[in-house]
Image (cartoon, rainbow, N blue to C red; front, side, top):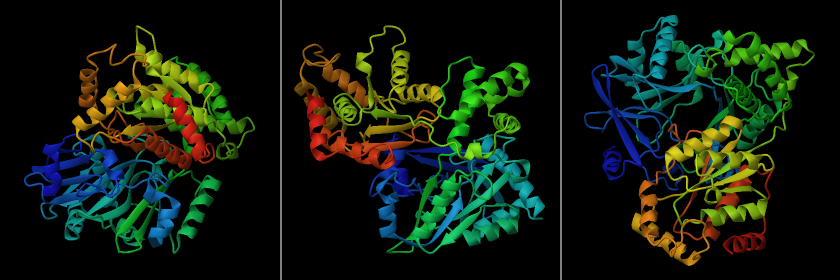
Length: 550
């Protein structure tokens, strides 16, 4: 923990700590920049996400969540081949409930109970979690002090999913009988992750009256994968849609736990599209649909808003979303449709936005043009936007227009500041609620700023006077402009509001050539979208790159 604390003054862009006062106890919560978790090896002293320490010395861990874990295929360590070669059973598949994270731990030697959100205390998510904590414990004839003492005695943190549609609706429905705190993990309060088996977690849930998280155990990864594929094909588990599974196993060469997640798109994405269609209609804005059933929903909800506007008064506050969906499905059944229409609603058009995050001279346009030539991606270059007023809005509209004829579009701009990324991703998601957003980030944390500036300046000089807006002769102060961009660069923070819509980050190197970075993007995109993209040959890649450079 001393090592983690020493990082903070060195770079607040990498590690940030926040002080909290909780019932007279001083605590500190810790957040790390997202891309660091993906580095191999991870440079951080701990990979915990959701980490609280005593605020007086920062040395004692009070509560800790899981290590950051990734979707299948998101990083090298979650590709199926790597998982098969490097992990061993038993493989525990726990249902991924659709709520928000709560942590619980014992304070003051177990005399009081701490309940937090992922990164904070004394916020609505933590307060509602505490309310549910009291309800569950009371039903089991237990007290908060008893649960706090249990956690302190085991030097452990209980990890919950708070699912309460009366507080905050997500995508999947939780009727009243299913609402509450789902206990899905118990972690030792240590720098390295040590998490209890699901069997023990379930025993604790029963003992203290919490909602149990359903789980399955398999000896081999093949059996676990077959189970996950079956649920994906069936679209339901025990008659209800689920978001996916979290998988727990062990590393081959040690007892160290390893975790990854398997997420499902359907009907999750269609339900999310209905929510955004409703928001667009409520604000008299145009909308787009990806599913045939969404067109029926849009026609139905327009009429409902006109006839029963009071039912949508709290829609913008995440209330009434599921009720509207339920009413539509009931109306759909009355008109001759069936529930099967929902679970068979496949083939919705996929839209993918590629967002470079870079500074001048990193090679983003070269990579973007090469991708466009190889795969036919739409490509909108900000330097070509000539609007004098609201240029940012014009850039967004041009991207949306490209989606009319392309499944993939590159938003070719530096996007080096959170405000630019947020306005871009929100504008696209507002009209295309199921658009998947992938960032290509030229990381500025691995090399000194002066070296990056020297390298990128040389590229600007080498490209000469052919650029639309910044050339050595046309802009003699180009180095000063570039220096400002490097100074303003902020890496993606997936936990922030600004970057929360970015689904995946492809890490690139501003010191590497465009050939290396282009191939890294191609490899990742082909793995992420195998049904849509096929990897081109090396000759095709070289030809596209040469064309992009001319």
